[in-house]
Image (tube, rainbow, N blue to C red; front, top):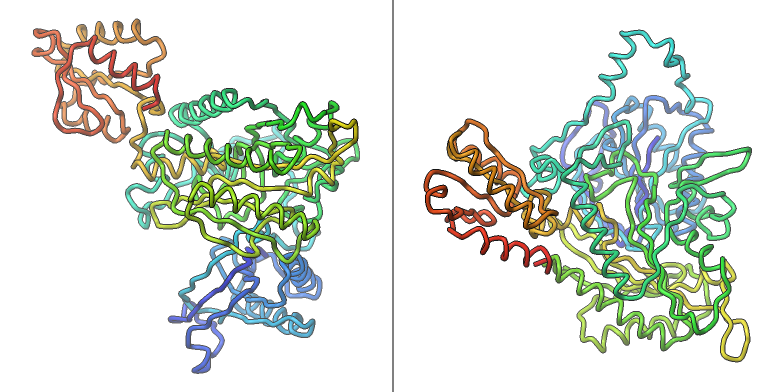
Length: 579
């Protein structure tokens, strides 16, 4: 059984027509649209390996109760959702499991609303923004989960077995029928940026062109952080479960972590960079002179997600998060650092010509740690900064993290969905849990105040948003191929090669290639346009004779003539200044 658990402000749903032969009868009231507010929506797919018995029902109910307790709700919406699995059980078993679970939860004082089974339904919901608002679960009986034995050792693998395994490892195919033209998944294919494969669900196979974009973003990130006096660190991918128990992730996030063991010790693949950063802080004593201390980490993290919720670069299992933790001595430093962070975020997004759809200030949730006095101070600081800057923002009451309030910056994708990119979070919990200290002017031990923040959010999601907002036409400094040289005829190839050599000599780091195929010029241009190459230079008899270049600039159909020196000056300035 697979579930996606969403803590929502509301969900609206309405049955439309039968999707199966086996359906439950509906009353006239059931046929109408239902609106449920402030609830835990449990999207559920019952699978072939699920057997209707007390053990499975108990595991399902325990999972719901655990999450409901964490998000502090007694209202449950059980929603059959086949899209979470491609290995569905019979409708009869699925319906019985959901109906039995509804009765058991109702007996335990939950208000349960069950969406009708076996119907196509339209639904609309608004998911809350806190860290526990979206949690996926896989529920089964341990003896059945280990249903596949490892029968095939490499040395005994037959030719037939090898071919079968290779077929199973075949590249995943993308259904583009329902995607917009500027959807980043289509652009990724056209520009040869990445691919996905079922051997690593939700993890990106970066191709050469995509890795160039990824690495250029990292270079810019590192350059800007060094300029702003950040220390850069790197922490391990796999760490002892003890660390995650101290941080609180073991209790609240274990179901979404990848677990392993080593020498009879439990280890976790890190879902977040923060706990490792706390250990770096603790490695050496700190004084007030060291604060504010800005520490950045571009760390790769892994979070378990159900395959049904994965969506290109927007929802992945492996992601690169550009975390930073800023340790402050007092409220004044927190305010100044928050202000500086917004400045830095605005510089980043101006560089990429991106605009935020909206900004949110999320305040204390019902379930939280820390005194009201600390929360008052934290919320006042963040709100004060926003008001001083005259920034428009939405107040999001009760949606802060359990450890502190936060400012979130949201951007839209091509389908009108909003995604959180940058965030600034004020954290009381980590310094307390890890007993972080510094020595103040009076030689007394004090607890630092900590800010978490990301700017890209995750590089994967940021690249997706950037591609969709620009329709793949990235700025020249970020483009995988910056110049392509086309030859009109075979007799122009020799001269075109000379031009390429001169460009490379003048600009050794330029990313340039050529298309000297014996095809039509329109075909060559079309291929280059599909790759969104910013500068396409055509070389023919006229160009050889005049010594000038015919340049198509960023999809402009009108060719512009230029000398080589003038063109080199223009593109060099554009790349250097990241224009």
